[in-house]
Amino acid sequence: MRRNVVFLCVFAAAMAFVEAAVVMYLRALIGVGPLFPMKDLPPAIVTVEIAREAATLVMLLCAASLAVRGGARRLGAFLLLFSVWDGFYYLWLRVASGWPSGVTDWDILFLIPLPWVGPVWSVLLLCAGMLAFSVLFLRAPEDAPFAPGRWGWASGVAGGGAIVATYILEWKKIGYGKGTPSGFSLPPFLLGVLLLVVSGWITYRRSRRPAGRSRSPCRPPG
Image (cartoon, rainbow, N blue to C red):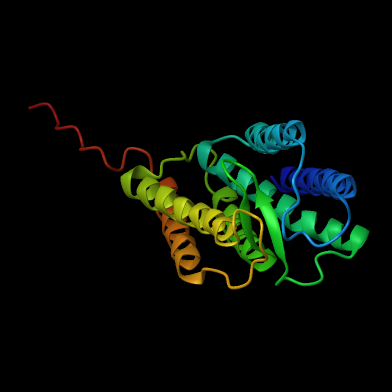
């Protein structure tokens, strides 16, 4: 398992470098300068960029599925990959270009389904949470399932939705990218983080439940 974890981290760090390189090429294409107000990209480039983001998620999912067995461990591998990938992405950008200058800098985070806008620290906070839960899930038994249950799914979907909505609303707050972001909408973001933590904990506890625990014992023949 330790060997797999090392390879997953190396893979994620290498992917992060590729991501950082692509972003530097895009910035050279649209002109070096502040990210905000957001500059317009040719529609063809936007389409390719959205497809590239989707392909990146597919790659992370496939790598997690191939690295370990069991639903809970695969979730842990995905969380590990995502957190290391996103964290190293900012590290490589800092080394190569000097940006971000600090964790309070704002960034264009994602484009699916609409642009996400938020401060770097918020992404790093999410990465820290994913990294912590990845340790828990990777330690689960190999046959432990990924089974959030009703409440796990409900809190996970609600938490993820709150975070995504917060980022997209920040984009709307600056005139759909035409302005400069300032104050971050902290309450809905923190609510989303809390709900994701609840979902992760519920899912982890269910993965530790012995198989067949919830089944009724068979009555002896009589």
